[in-house]
Image 1 (cartoon, rainbow, N blue to C red):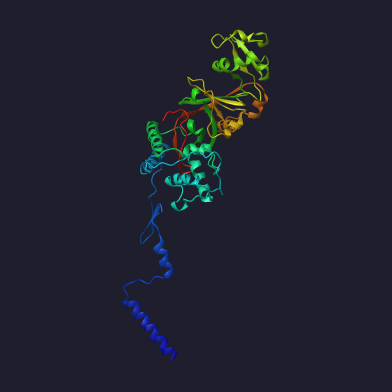
Image 2 (cartoon, rainbow, N blue to C red):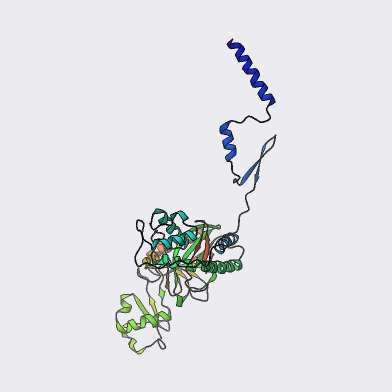
Length: 405
């Protein structure tokens, strides 16, 4: 009887398979097929003989094309926002942080929501971890310390209207369009309002360095040149404007001003004993001396400077005032560019140049020593208040420190 039942079951299964119009698919397999999404950049085309791989990856974009693409995308986003929407965003006089509550938090959250950094559901009076994360993203977007605490610098950007973002993006797009279609594979780039230097080798970002640029009244110029030599243990030649405006009044009051700073003076190229000079006789219009600062740990140029031809007499250099790199806005110089971790940049340039100069030996000499590069390295100093950061996959906005936009 058991044998007859098995035969009948087999016949029934064969009849169902023969008459069915649909293929038989396992339940788990069906779930997998149903959830496949068309996001792969490579498509497999099945044939009876083999599997052919068709590469549908878009061609690589040049740095300029990538900037244009992402900036235009960002411009489209901001143009879709309500430009008339206003928020009462003023610094409350104290730092807000996670765990705080109050109505002052509401306008901040609304601004973050407008920018797509915070969900509508999060619009409460509580400063929670979600808001802290959104603040960090906002700070990163504006190139300031991303600590999640909205201080004065954060509120400076929170108060920006939508039209300012559009203004910056449109101005930057015009600038980028005018840039060369291709850049040297190995180069130094400095973006003034970003306070950032980037070193590229073989068109790949190797390292970036925080920088200090010129004050509004002593603006760092935009230029293109080539770094052709470095000077270790540099001696600082004090610019005449600094000598007469800053130093002369102090020299007239303090006879030890120059000695305390390891400085000396020359007239017509000849060193002169400054202790015998009556500086009270001189003004900004008749001061005849050149002031120099000897090689010293406190030298204004630090341990190294990077020289490139330009009509503005500016250059890159080290600095003993490292604490200034902790500031979000760094317009403190008289036009030259101070580089954080300048010795690392020096090593990178020498390595790239296959220059075997021993930096320690040069520094140990204690006097200025020039080291020429076999192949000068291009340097581009430009002014761009908006930039797509590919490392962060983020369009960033920078304070217009020279009011050019």
